[in-house]
Amino acid sequence: MKKKVNSWDTKWSPKAIEMYNEYLKIANVYELNFNGDYGIWELTGIPYPHAIKALLYKESNPKEEIH
Image 1 (cartoon, rainbow, N blue to C red):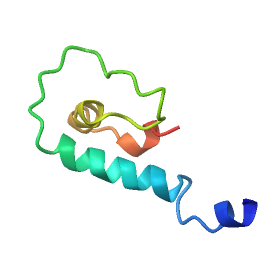
Image 2: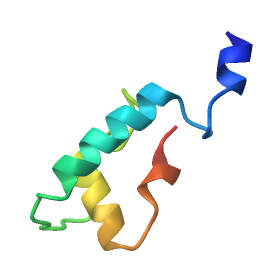
Image 3: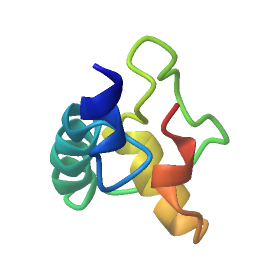
Image 4: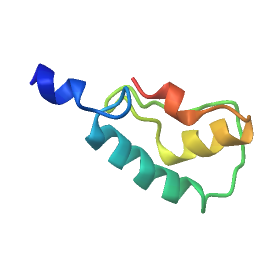
């Protein structure tokens, strides 16, 4: 398993990047009505589409929020 992890191109797993990219597609069609809440993404460790949209609006890198 460690060998597989060491083969990743990024600090995130391929599955996390796949989920993030799908969420990013969804986020790009969202209309942003910011209320100060980024939402809860603790269960997956990946920001939900609405949070990605808010982070992009604030010119933050949503990938830095993956944990």
